[in-house]
Figure (tube, helix red, strand yellow):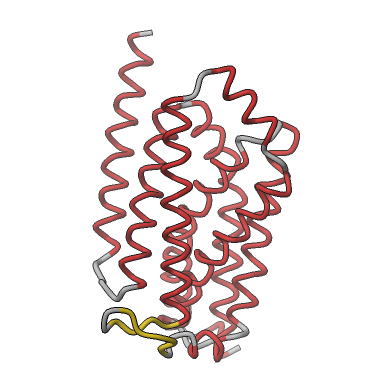
Length: 236
């Protein structure tokens, strides 16, 4: 009962929920772009499975807090820069995110409609789920480290993660439909993922800069694109 009546706990819970939802937006966008390559009847199933896997992965990592803390111990040194397990995961995840973003942007800009149909047939359900799991690990690690740094109660962390993933499950479908309906938004989302991948690599090499700058740039770009969409709709 003390946990439920403590105002500090509720403030920490609400703050962590907001942060987890903001961090989860990247995950939703990436999952939406990947699953849009699947047949229509498999897309919703893949999105839900990807987010449910993210939920279990984050809760599992929360129960492995001692292991997460050991990830900050140096494993090796590159050019006088100590690299820990967390750094290595962030660097590899960032590289993978940059690779996928550049590949998707190239495909979007260069491929023909016929090539798009052939590519869609080559994409398998299992390969998409495998890529989602790989990126879920990176995003989940970042999310859990944020939670551990803010709150010292495991119950509050798990509750905030469950709420954030619930919001992600609810919003994944409309976000995916919107991104799929507007090609320019998809390219913009890929550019965001490219920027986030670069930020993850920088974080892995201990180059820290406020994420607020990234989210402000994303919000401003989305606002401009919404204006463009409205103007185009009025012209039509």
